Structure formats: C-alpha cells, structure tokens
Length: 291
Ligand code: PMP
Image (cartoon, rainbow, N blue to C red; front, side):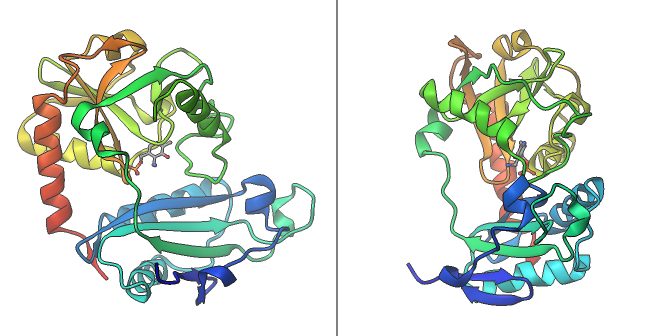
C-alpha cells in the first residue's frame, strides 16, 4: 500500500509523520469532534451535511473550528486527490488542540484539524446477505443532558463499552437503550424498523445521532411513498417488527436478522430493506461533491 498523505493543520504530511501532541486534549480527554464521510466514484457523498453537522457538534462543545466551511470542503477534496482515491472513507477530526494537563479547554489555543482519506473496511459481506445478529447492550446510551449523543464527539467510550459487549457475545453490533429503556441507536449506526410497510426510527431526543444516512433513508422513503416517522421504540418493537435495518456512512444499510436471539421477520433481508438499499446505491452513484 502506498504511503498515505494526511492533511494536518493546513499541510499534507506522510502518514508516519502525521502526529499530534500528547498534550492535545483530543487525546487527553476525548475533547473534539469528528465526521466519517464516504467517497464514491470520485464524489464525496453528502459532504455539506457532514460539514454542517461537524460545525453543530463544535458549537455544542464551544470549539471554534479554525477554518470556514468552504475551506474544509476544499481540504476534504484535496485529501482525496492527494491519495488518488476515487472510492473510500474520510475521517475529518477537529480536536481541542494542545493545552496543559488541566481540564479547562480554554487553555488550548489552537484546535488541531486532520483528515485521513483511506480505503474502507466494511462489515463482512455475510452481514449484508444474512443480516446482523444484534444483542442489547447492558451499557445505557449517554443521557442527552450528560454527553448528548447528537454531538459527534471524540468521546466514544459509551459506544465502545457497548461494542465490547457485542464482540464478547460474538457479533458486530449492539442495540443501545436510553435511560428510560427506549431504543436509542446502535454503537455506530442508527436503527429503523418496518411494520406493515411503515418505517419508524427513534427520534434524536431518544439519544441518537442525527445520522446522515438516516436522513437519506427518510428522504428515499418519502420519494418511494413509504410512510416514515420518528417515534420511541422498545426492544419488543424491534423483536416483533417485519423488518429491521441499520444505517451509517460506513455501513450504509445493514439488514438485522435477530435481536437477542429472536428472529426478526423471516430472519432474511426484507423486501423494503432491499428496495431502500437499491435506491441508496443509485444515489451514491449519481450525486456528491466532485473532488
Ligand atoms: N450513530 C452513531 C453513534 C454513529 O457513530 C454513527 C456514524 N458512524 C451513526 C449513528 C450513523 O451516522 P451517519 O449516517 O451520519 O454516518
């Protein structure tokens, strides 16, 4: 594999030279924000939506991104070009920057900005063909008044604790409930259920990220004339749904076969899930910001 060129604070450096300080609060405290973005056929999918969400996350944690939105868009495009990528995954990160060992973020004078443009490692193909077997994590999703899951921050320990449960149970994803017992999302993906042809996904207020792919699926549903809404869901609603699938920029659309050993629907990717997947792929082939 060729040496990757990493965008770091305005310059491209070789991957072995792409280093941040041990005093960076992104590392010391998970103090920062990020985006995971897809590049298809030389076009970056929904780049503006990702940049808008990055700025919203930064605003929520009082982090001033030292670049304008157009500058970040341009940096993402050049990161793809520098690495001669036509299909892949971008990791755009803004950390609080270098400070002292105290918590106070205002000791950090300059946020660190980096972009990794790489190829992507998807879930194994069997997951798309057979569906993922979910478990419910005992780890409860962060309360929105603690670390709001709507903020895509570098603080992913809540998700990682749940992901450990999934891996230890022999699977790749876990369902996370909020403090009230309603479904929030999975550790790195949003969740939809389908019952009688109607799509439902938990509201962001239940402790979900306002996923870009989730938004695209809601758009597609409306285009296809499928009723879709946001509502609180319980484990029961997931177990007894006709179909269930996950959405995420990296994962795209992933059918869910079961929850805690209860087969969902036929246990195979459902007709609506497959229809949405086809439409999603059409979209990724036909739109995006050219690099
Ligand atoms: N929820 C969480 C916790 C995530 O980390 C992600 C992104 N990996 C998603 C949902 C899906 O969001 P998006 O469609 O914007 O990638």
